[in-house]
Length: 115
Image (cartoon, rainbow, N blue to C red):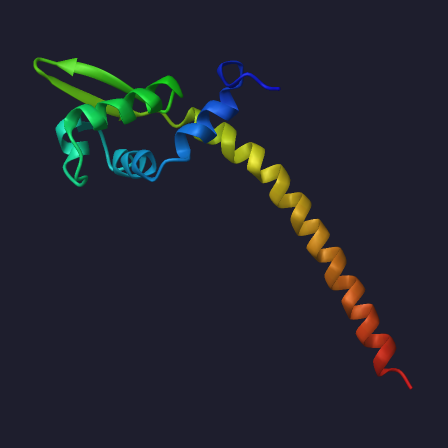
């Protein structure tokens, strides 16, 4: 069994599995934000958002920097690029499979149409 802590891709996908964390990352695509700004759209406490941010930080998807009393968060996209590259291999595979199925179905159709 794969140890999650030894697999950066697994850590990335685990972090992306939660809709709140995905929404936080989506917000960070628009620019850096404070923890308070990130928490605003959610009906949860600041400590709950801080837990979500720690998961994203452990996955390498964001960094936090303290500016006075405010913690600002910054999106780190590299783990996302690696996840997209992994998914891309499977997209190409399934496209090839579907293209083969289309070719086969077209052959069957042509055979049926011939007298």
